[in-house]
Image (cartoon, rainbow, N blue to C red; front, side):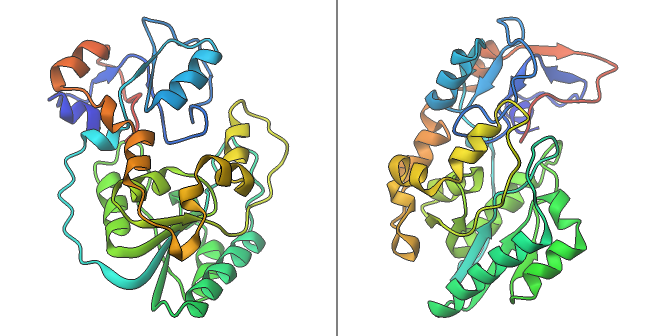
Amino acid sequence: TVLRRYLGVLDDRVAICGEVQHGWSVGVATPMRAAYTEACPLYVWNARSASAAVAQGAICHVIGAPIVYAQLDVAVRREPGTILAFPQHATPGYAFLRDRAFVEEYAAWLGSLRDTNGLIGSTVCLHAHEYENVALRRACQRYGHKVVTCGHPWGSGHYLHDLFGFILSAEFVTSNAATTPVMYAALAEKVVFIDGPIAERAPPAVLGEQFYAEASDLAWVATNFPEFTKGLDSQPAPATGRRELGLDHRKSPHDLWNTMRLLFDPASTRLAESA
């Protein structure tokens, strides 16, 4: 939706021929389900993802994340003393063993962090399919957290706007893994850090799951993103956000149009891009 709007394409029947990287990842964040060719390539966010894609034999183009093309008119009031948490979410097709016991553990950890450091408010942002689980929401609320969601990202014109609004309103942002919201918060010059309990997961069953495991490995995070390991004392790291979201790869509408392949399909109801 974001990329089509940036290109001035208003007809929903015009879709991208290929696939846009779904989110930030150690690798490509998109299971390599198909052969990505020059006629139907993979569009990735940054050099890290491009290297991972090429290593798996994909033809790809680096264009930056959809958020660097978004026109986000977000007017929110920053609330000092508040923390926003994004626990790494489970995804259909990935073998996470997400249950209420883990969410309780994470919520208890976040509540302790809030109370020990004298913060006045805490919010947990759950992925849409987890937010729909009443037991998971109540597990967070039991420890005094506000629970929100941005909804489903696919086809939502408000997803990025709402997500960025949540980030901008908080003083601190945290996650238990290197995730897309962490990079958004870094770009927004927030104090963002990675810490907290990690969900148990079954052995990888889908190509690409190993990237989720690495992203939540605090030793891996400390080596690759030490700027996110100092808790509430972390410093804003906008340069990291720029690099990981591919801001320097942002293209003009003319160049992006020439890079991407658009397909008119009267019967199409699915857009390949995600934003």
